[in-house]
Picture 1 (cartoon, one colour):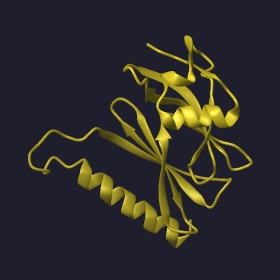
Picture 2: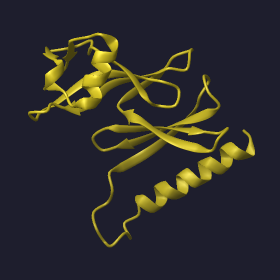
Picture 3: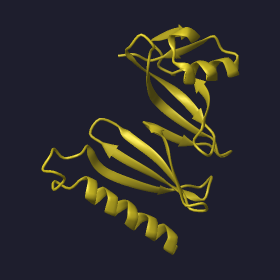
Picture 4: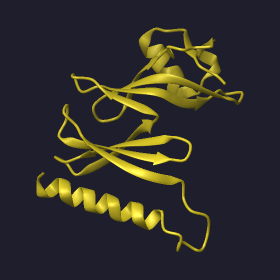
Length: 150
């Protein structure tokens, strides 16, 4: 393992120790349960998975440019072409209420396409969603997105 990866690991573990410490204003413990670090094969970087009590947060630590990018919650798949699939991305309808869908990101973590949830319970038109999802639907020529709801 090279020195840069070890340095990032030390920084990450220091931050995790600090934020999971009970000494922070004697308040409740933060939600972080554990951190998982995986090397990436499609880009020169590390996939950092922050396991919290209710979900997982995902980050890419770019080792070439020393960047850290949030790439969404849930399960992440890295495609050979560098794209990232965010399975079970969570969002909210304009009128309220949560829903889950899949989201495709470029190698820098920017959203580039919305994908119908494989276990969809309902489909909704563009006007049901906030601008981020509506713009992606329009860019893809789609007039609805099929999502999963509780």
